[in-house]
Length: 323
Image (cartoon, rainbow, N blue to C red; front, side):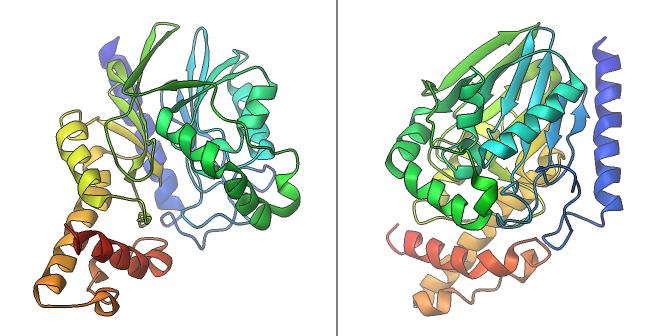
């Protein structure tokens, strides 16, 4: 049974890779891939029983309806678990419609990967369906403090597509690990440690060797570094907690499903490289103005490079200046 599952999983990931190749690669220039839906792309079965609607590798916009992260769901004999509520009530409803095309089993839990808008603004739709929402305590603190600001940001780019969305916080929280046993599937919701954003969490299914990583891992697009991001903490969490797990199958927070080596390359290796460049700049007496121009050409193939590379450099300089 395990051998059969592994063969099917490998075939599914290969198929997902073929889809990526057909599209050229993930790009902020690729038009909406599923125009008949609010979703940017139609959910694909990554491995047996696990589906993901892959978001645009671009900033949120009216054209992509804020679907620029991955909205995933796990189908079991007793119900469906969803990773990420979506950026609006309408986007959440569109995802629910796709889930119903796959299974008649009910959605029993929605998980917010962190406190960002595209993870939690769809909570209002799911709560209206009577579905529980799970998030890390730090993510709920973020949505409690900044929920109105997050909603207003979505309303600006999404305009009429924001209709019906309200701030709704997760009604279930945890700190380190939350275990779910559903239909014979053991699902571990983990908070491995500080990473991209407060309350980042990971969904780990050991029996299938698959992790839905949330924003601890990026693929195909440049990761953003926020003013509150601690890159040294992110690397420590990666190397001490995520690396020992090293899942075979990965659905990252952004970008197509892939393997662990690939997300390591575009997440951990990028952070290591940028910090090394900033350290060289500091050692030579460089200032913030010059930090924006450290050489990041190794990563210029990544989507959102133009929007994020210089910002990332400046924020890492501000962090490392006081380390």
